[in-house]
Image (tube, rainbow, N blue to C red):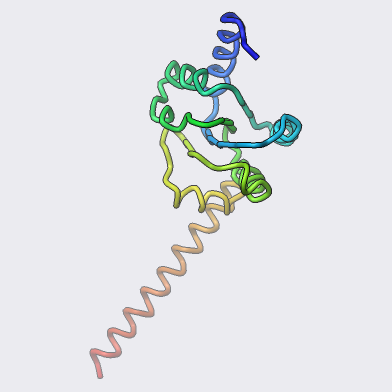
Length: 163
């Protein structure tokens, strides 16, 4: 469907205003997904106050150029779906759910959090946490375990030196 220039301008302005407000931007690539399935995604994401946007890659390039997020421009190939969240980290669980459900049809391109592009390792770790409190508990657990392990190693070293 060919859109008129005025309609394209409206889409660009709406998307710019919406995306500017969000801290988490996830780019997904999809192929052979029906319109009904995309509508199902939209319903599920809107229920949880997430924003989902699907349009042509040229419009995405224009939108992100005007927002000054040119770093994402290289990810606009094939068909792209953008999912955004203001501060709710449960978005990673929901996206991961759909990535598992549609393994051959839906692919993760990039995650842009708080004005930074994350690496693949971070992307996999983010899925674990449904909210910031879980992330903090995990972090505290790691610190405690590392401290205990270091203490045990130090005690072993002292014991070996005395022998």
